[in-house]
Image 1 (cartoon, one colour):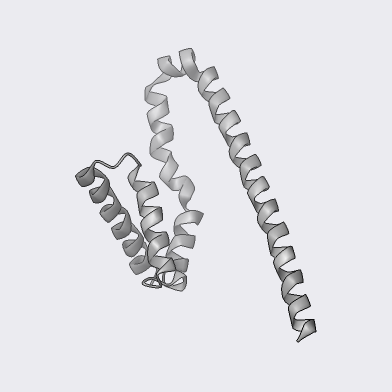
Image 2 (cartoon, rainbow, N blue to C red):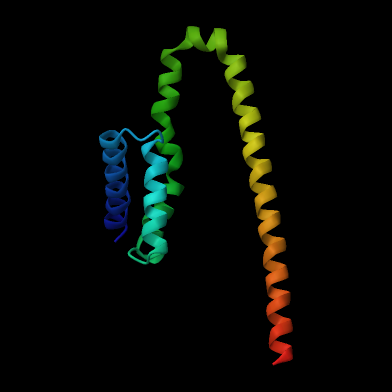
Length: 127
């Protein structure tokens, strides 16, 4: 069933790509697709279990999808010699910002979850 799940995920992306092109949306199709999938999951039209194995396979094979990008970099060696340092600096800084932001959000959500659990346990004890 993994192939079917991958087809569904690809179909969602194709729909998102169509919406972005047709309505000239200012956000990329991949982000639109993720938002569309989020809406489908929260509205319970799609269950996460229906797509879990296909998404796990795509994540496991993600490196395979970056090979064309690496090959493209080889085609632009003069640009890499001139701007490679700046590009690397941007990549490193943006990676650090993403990791730090993710850590901060996870920390806040974890603390919120602990407070929520404490409140729930106090409510249960009072009843």
